[in-house]
Image (tube, rainbow, N blue to C red; front, side, top):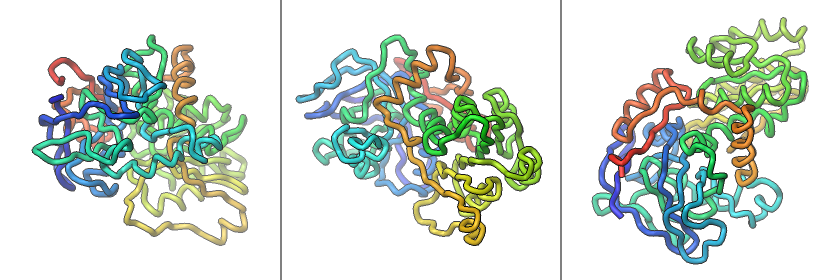
Length: 374
């Protein structure tokens, strides 16, 4: 079928909204009509070249919609099902999935490969060329054809534009604070970087019972938002927070710190380490440049204070369980989703959305699809 998509044809170019050809689902795949797509910072890494991907590429990895076609052999979904697209597929059968680590599913090896899991071919073409979909999804288009392992069925009563948010940012931030950091009641938690992921790390830390939740970001408006989501203290930088965190904790420092900056640098690790005390844990959730190797870390203090440095992907979540559960929390008023969306855009305005993100104007921008996009 012919539809529209926002494509990237090279590093540091703008997104180009143009006609694409979307293939029907083959065995193991479904086609989904999307209601919305989040504008996540991870797609910005395609623009900067920090995340390696084949060009042309179609962006977007945070979406939700309704299944319109089902390929041969698909048993987990049917036409008319409402689904959230998980940015990492979860087959449920490989060793990581079987051990309760669906976020590390072996199918993730195909994540940036550019071709479909099912048969190794391109499902999207444009200008006569195969197109690489971000995270096997490519939600910067009102229709996607994806592997069934990337689609999680949800209840039909959830608003799809809000449900899209749990396909990446919400689940990643929430899980980084609750699962990976393992926040305990009464602890002090620092979140560095208040965007679409960091604001949900704050939600998670609050829900886990943290006594003090400290938000760090250079944008004053984002710090105001952090307080609205439960942060108890805010600072413009990690350096500005060190002395205050010491005073707030009687010199013991925070138990946990979560780094959720949009473009993580090597020095961010040491900044976070300086904010935690003995036996504390720093969780690295933010994405950095795939080519950079240097991290600033005081190994003397790291060893003597027995600190922990932990990477995190998708918040350590099992998306097939976590996505429906988070949406049930939203339904019960215990998870904020409506408040996350600062600005909505049309597909044609995708570049404006990312300009606003760079300027620090959005917690999460979102594309809402209309008939004009289809």
